[in-house]
Amino acid sequence: MNAVPILDPLARLVDAVEQARSAAVEEAAADLGPHAAAGAVGAHLEAVAEAPDAVTHHFAATQGGYRGWRWSVTLATAGADEPVTVSEVVLLPGPDALVAPTWVPWHERIRPGDLGVGDLLPTPEGDPRLVPAYVASDDPAVEEVAREVGLGRRSVLSRHGREQAARRWHDGPHGPSSDMARAAPGTCGTCGFFLPLAGSLRAAFGVCGNEYAPADGAVVEVGFGCGAHSDVQPESTSPVAVAELVYDDGVDLEPSGSRE
Image (cartoon, rainbow, N blue to C red; front, side):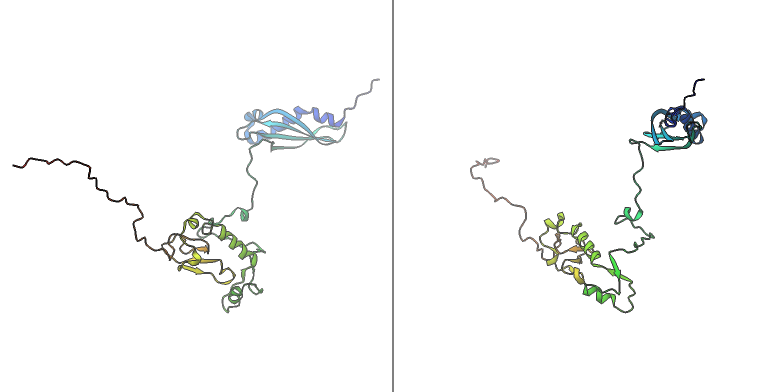
């Protein structure tokens, strides 16, 4: 009597390509309909062993809008004499698939200027920019305001928060590195329209109070400047060079008519 050969379970799973394809077509039919399902499952791409008793077959997804995606069918068996069964059928992106960008939490996506009328922007718990108002601060102005009776502020800017604001303002459009500042006749620190801030930021920042200046009502760095500086004086002479008037006496003049 000849012995019946026992196939390796992993080899049986790798060879079960058509069973895996049928499972992928059945899954595609649930979304695309029976007529389009067969065409949605393309060529067999590869078989990947997940475990000694499990293999995943990958088929190209050929339906529109899924370029680079693949139907992934995982087959499994309980032993050499046990049937091959379908464990899972999913549609997964391949290495060259067109996918949406990685999701970013809203508090990381929001940017200055995004807040509109009626929008609410909760402060994150434990925000390092803020400290409770009763905590002692190294900024005398903050101490004075925080202890003011009836103000009702629960928190004030921390040192970290002030440093962040100072760096942002210094590097911003009203800082000393802007084109406007480099072309200005003077800096805000020497301008009569400059209103210094209170506290530890007083020496470096203030608010512009000139309604004709481009930064009116905005925080400016002392090194910023514009053409509306209070020391600008009107030009006493024409800014355009005027050539000297020259008489040419080398031209012969003819009378326009004879005298009778």
